[in-house]
Length: 246
Image 1: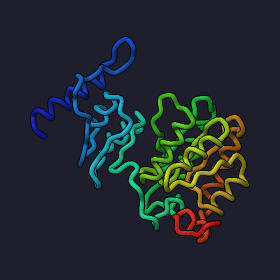
Image 2: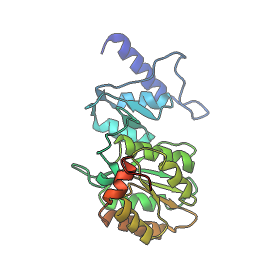
Image 3: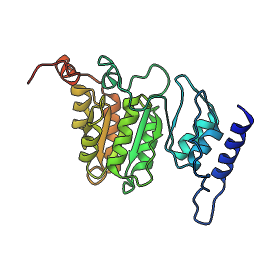
Image 4: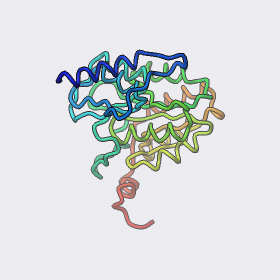
C-alpha cells in the first residue's frame, strides 16, 4: 500500500469514527473513490465503507477477511461479495445445496421488519442450531427490500440459505422468487415448512410477523432445519429451464 492510499484510508477511518451532533458519520470529500479491499479485508476497510454509507464491499475471489473485520461487518450489516448477482451454472442449484455447507456452520442471511418483536428469539434459535447469522443491511427494514437482499445473498453464495420476516410472508416470498437460483416459500405453519423442504428444496424461508407468534416461528425453524431438502427431477428440470411445456 503506497503513502497516498494509506493517507486516504486513515482519513476514511477518521471519518467513520467522527460523529456530529446529528449522530451521522462525517462525510468524505466529494469525488473520493469507493473503499475497496481486493485481497485483504481489514477492520479499517469496513469502517471506511461504513463512513460512506455503503452496504457492500467488493473483493477479489479468495480474499482474506480478518477476525476484527468480520466483527465490524456484522456490527454494521455490510456484506462482502466478489461477484454479487453472478449467475450460477444450471446444474449448480442453491436449493439442492441449501443447508449443506462444505464445512463449518451454515450461513443464514436474516432480514426482519422493524415491527416484528420476535427477532431476538429468532436469532437465538438460529445460533442455538449452529447457524452463522448474517443480518442483511436495510436501514428502513422494509419487507420487500429485505427479501431482495436476502435472496441476493443466497444467490451470490454469501449465504447458504435465508430467512425473511415481513408482515405476512407473502410479499417476501414473491420478491425473493424473482431472483435466479432462489426457491422461496411462505411458511406460516410447520406443515408448509416441511413441504417446502421436501417438495422444492426451498432455500429462503418467509414468515409473517402479523400471523406467526414468536414461539411458532421457533417451531417452524426447527422443522425447516431438520427436514432434508429434496426436489424431484421434473421440478428441477423446469426450474433449470430444461423441461417441456406443462
